Amino acid sequence: MQTPETHSNPDSRFFENASVFVSRLDTFDRLVQAFNSELGRALASAKHFERFKDLGVRVTSSVGQQAFLKVLRQMKDRSGGVSLMGRSYSRVGLDLPNDEDAALVREYREILQGDGGVLVNLSDQVRLECSLYENGKRRTITNEEEFRAISSNGNSALITAMFLMGFVQMIRGHSPVRLVWVTDELGRFDSGNVGAFLKTLALNDIDVICASPSVDPALARHFPRLSIFESTGAIFTTENHEQEVLDEIA
Image (cartoon, rainbow, N blue to C red; front, side, top):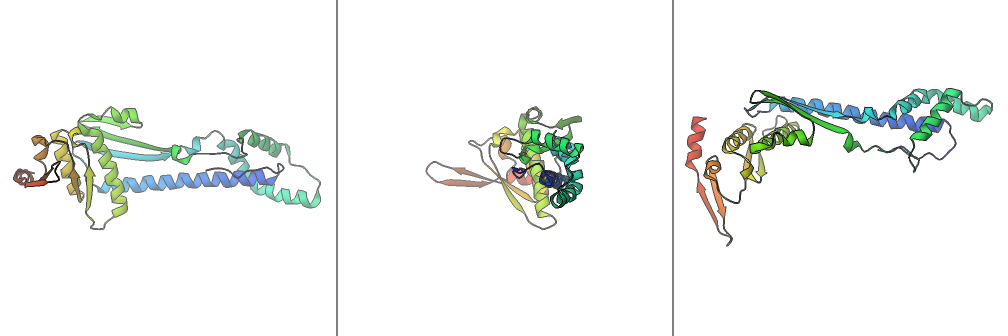
């Protein structure tokens, strides 16, 4: 998001531009807050993996932490009065802006970039935080490094799946729509996580198609149907009756 270019004399237009820019950033903040609330409700209604308890997700905006906003907010607060005064200047041609307004314009000038505007990449201002209990231990994830720390045995894939289930629930709502997810690199999971992954997604009306370069019996046992694709183009499919027994036990 970028402010309009300002090449005119320092008058009320500086204050008006600052006011519009701040209002748009405030609107972005409110939209992020609304999305965070909606995602929280969606995750609360979704079935969770048993190994992860008390899942909490926060999506926040760091737009308000921009250092230059202090000056722009002051200009926004002054924009109404300055606009009226500016029209008075043009008609009467007597008074000049007071010292406070002149100081704000000078500070505003220091903020402007080479093209005469202020640029904020909104995609860089969104922060995602996840908190949960894993096997009785509290974990908080705020960056990629913390996410990698719990990535053994496919845990990161399970956490990613929880986020995606929340997004799906936001879109699907209460409609009886069943979805199909395609998952690659199944070998990253251990057998226990595969079972939890498939069971939880099924409870959320999501079917899974997975691919793996080889068939590990410990993983394959969780799937009701297995297909092998040969290099010749032939496809061999078999039904897994062991999965039916596992379903009955569950």
